[in-house]
Image (cartoon, rainbow, N blue to C red; front, side, top):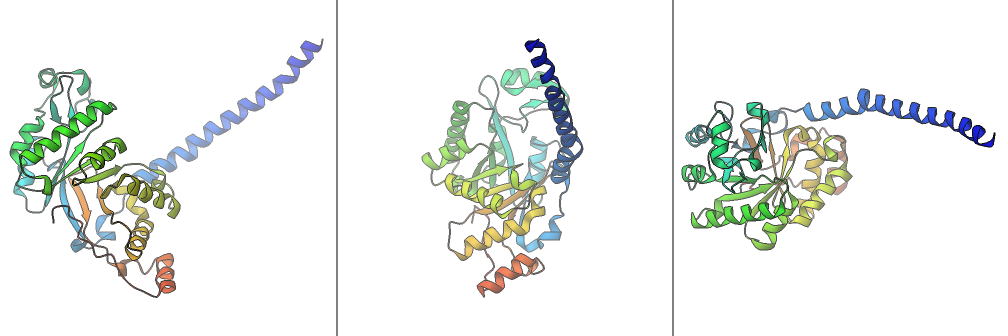
Amino acid sequence: MDLITEVLSQKPRSRKKERILKLTAIFFILVVIPFMVYALFEIPETLEIFKPSEIILGAHRGNSVDYMENTLPAFQSALKKEKYKFIEFDVQYTKDKQPVVHHDESLIRIQKKFDYLEDLTYEELLEVSDYHIPTYKEVMDLLAGKKPLNIEIKSQGNSEDDIKLTDYVISDCTEREILNTTIISSISSDVINYLKDNYPEMKTGKIYYVYAGSFIDSEALISRVFEEADELETDYLMIYGANLKHFGTLWREIWHRERTNQRKIFLAYWYFTDEMYLVHKVNQSNYYEDPLTRRMIMNESIIVPPETIGAWWT
């Protein structure tokens, strides 16, 4: 009887847990997930925030609007168009350690094929691809020395390969004598750390697509990103354009660092188009309407906008 009583007494608690789990799942489906999607897809217009003189446009994956991204025609077009002041592209390894220029780890998004670059030799990759995926050498032979470059190391999750590829790119840029007009960027903190430990003269950019500050406009969360950038000693924060909806908070952090003579960290942002921008300078007058910015200026009794040259090649 005692055993039966104990079992019966546990059923209500089990049902209660099930209800809590169901309510939690419903909350995530109806509230949390829509909020996250909204936060990532609410993308402010660039000219709502910056004047044309305050930003520098680069070709993100080449001219990826008129041509297939990260292809030779996209890069040829980017070279010809005066509006693109620099060119960005992605490099990663195939199975046989051939450095190729391709953004995704697989062909799923663009070609609807479930093939991963790390599982294919370069020859096999060309056989299954619907278009020519260029080698790193082909792209560099076309671009090197003609416009400044932002080369992104695409991590496949293998630290040893990431380091090997980074060394290869640095060695190649050194031989081509373009280190002073090239920046290496990555979403991988390990790559940025390795660069600063072994190639301290190299300009670096830490990429942020989604972080806590993407969803909540919080000075603490934004400050944490800058603290991480300081720990990594990276030169640029490269953020997805949706994060500009919190630009007032980002700007106050930049302005505070400028005022207190902290290490300069420049800002860049990108979209899923041909656009990548460097923030050349920030005009403080744009943000007088923000109450916190206005109060900050009044309390400190000083107006010193950050006037920074945001280009790594100058």
